[in-house]
Length: 502
Image 1 (cartoon, rainbow, N blue to C red):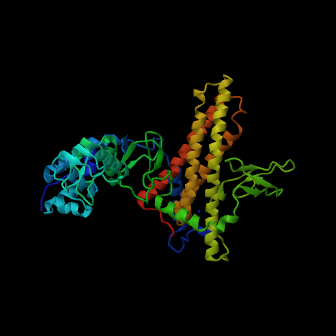
Image 2 (tube, rainbow, N blue to C red; image 1 turned 180 degrees about the horizontal axis):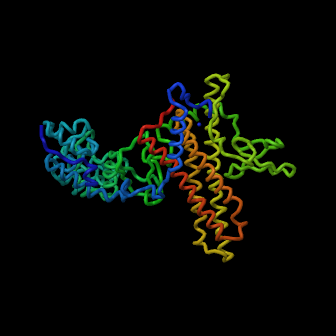
Image 3 (spheres, one colour; image 1 turned 30 degrees about the vertical axis):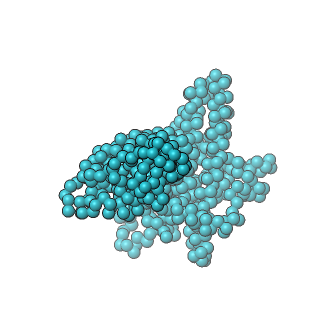
């Protein structure tokens, strides 16, 4: 076996309630010890300080134009071929076959496998490495006589025009970085030099080659934004059990694992289970109406027309203020309605308990999903308010940019809250879950406070400087509470603290 070592392609490119309480008497823990432990937990929780930082650190991800990979790919092929000693197309085809793991390819080659044997699994015939001969004769494709006829080893012949059309078509339809002979059932590879010589679509050919490399590399992804040609490379191994969001320089943010919208704090594995649960129980939940409810005081029908959960009955004879989620009086509202309460009497069946629990979390998920839609409309309202204030010369438009930024933060934090209920649904009861729910409540309060301010008070404020301070402070606090929640989840992921129900 050959002892030659070769760097991988990736290296080469970049060298809690009472019924839920634990009975500590059975554990042999004294009340004094328990008090000390609770005090320690409370102290630790209160001492959580999260430094405000850019969540997409340069050391964690790199963004570059896709075409910048071509020289690196050529370098990998050249280096591998110093040992293989074959044509570049054969070498690149083998690298593609081995998912661009050059070290694995060379190890197999050193074990005594020749080029033809290694290519056999791909059902292609190795290229001879020699330029295709040119002569006179009849083109097999257009049946016209030609003096610039390209001849292939299988006997097939093509004029340069037809060969260009053939190569261009193969490039456009192909997802593999190689093209075989146009001859009937011929599988011989066409050299890169010949493709470059006879095909005008060189850019398309390079894109296919680059795409094959990116798709084979688990630490690279194309940006999913329309018209964006950039590639994001991360320095960690993708894992469905971790939340891993990235951001392209074009501004697009997405989950690196599932390629969907970012969905912290829930990981891809749990999110798929949540989506399937929603799909399975959709018919059962048809009777749930998340858009209209009855005023708990006058019983008149109320339609939710904003993102805030602080509701006011507009019936002149009523005016009752209540929480959209728990229907409790808004005076003294503590946001504890976000925490799921188990039945204490034990009279329900397991199916009833499961359905009640799912309805609870799905309702919260749906409320925030709907509120996100309202907050998107709020963005237009805020932009309009900025224009109105700027037109009155009370503050410049640039000085008012903290307002749309506040809406951006509001939307981001609402999405975090929405996905947090999918995460909480599957969590086993634990001290960590209690802390997580407390963080949820704090984030909820911050979200609803800023939401209510933005919906009602922008144009009503006379002191614009004070409004600016209030909103900027609220936005900063909102971002901080989100970071506290996400940092706690991430720490739990890294330590293996989170236990999920089936």
